[in-house]
Length: 601
Image: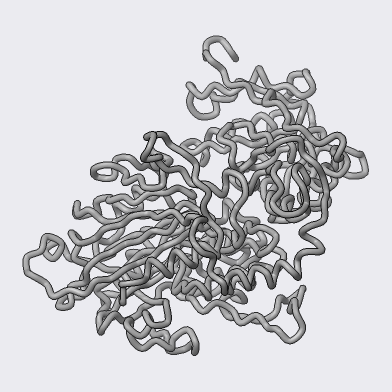
């Protein structure tokens, strides 16, 4: 695929010319014989800089979302270091490129979506413009690229004013991405063709290099039905291998996979290498990496928001680089390698990969500061409006507990807003943990004052603006919902729903599958759940539709559609807090973790 169709994006005829512009690059592939170095190649050095899961975090993320774990060399202890912010990320990438005439910047999806107000208010146009400025060349789509549907994703790629909100400033039209979005495994149900290019090919001093981009096959399970309507999502391995074969037929011998799916490393520190043979990482990416065609020379991943720079054996047993740079622009991965000019392959023994912290001690990039200031000025009247007060940090995304304080607040807000008979008559509410995108931080982020929650901060916590639903579920179905947290598609990686006050139960994680939920312990306002009774249950439209592996929700009846989750959250903060009586973090007393499993059912 030639880049010759998009002026401005394709002005760089060679990689060296691209270096002058501050962009560029690539990655590559050996045969087994070449991997073992049976000849002395003439080589070109190549640098690859990779990010993933940026999620529109233009400003430095607050709370634990804005830190990265590393080992303090003075004490040997794990510490949390402030990191992230696109002004610092741009500086870090530009510094990293110095001395590397051959360099490329790539991403593994979720560059946009679930974004803080500064980007989300403008349908992520600011983030696309920021990526243009810092020199992103190509990215896979992630599940969040489909939050507003395929048509909106195409608008972000190609430009144009938003179909509903229009252009935000008179005379200023959104130009779209200078980088390529790749969606090899996302096809139209009508045409069976990819909705975006499946791969991108560039030339490195005459060597063709291809990048294939995919999102996780399970995207429809974690995106609203409206976002993926009319789309099919294919198997990651089968898709990558299909297009690897196609690229090879076109003479492309150097191939890199950008995959929006990831792993779970054994260590939380940013520079973890997964141990010998990649044994220190689990999760979907392990089997994916082990089955992708050996002609793919390196794999850049995302989705799990974890940090790792691993070597996982390919199907022929040859180690292959598999990396991820956490999330929110707190890290970038630097991969250095050599290209065999005769074969066009990666010299596998030459590959090194390391994550680097985007520290806030460096100078801010002035052009990104100007971009942030520009959009902050437009957003300020909305973003800075106080809506509530808190007595201390109330952690959501940053909480490692199964029962998260901010999750309880959100579920309580949904119950309070939808309990009136004319609003749905809700008796209990559930909140999916993945929808809690940040923390409420006591320390002021600007001039609002400590403890003040602004609209912008609330938006960052609940950015999807999902519409709420109230459904009738039987007690048996409520029990199924709780069991589906730890069974079915959630068996390997449990998803513990956040629950409203009055609902309590016990989890025994020493058991397996659905048996982890102690059914006899489930109570609503102190009364055991009756499997034959009917209950009015509140949840956002994503969860109510069976998303995140909760099909029991979809079986509910008598649906009433309410206001958005963000509206309920804001209303609850306004009604239940003041400067004199700020909201305290709720106690963790709804989900009990059993210490023994005997005779509990």
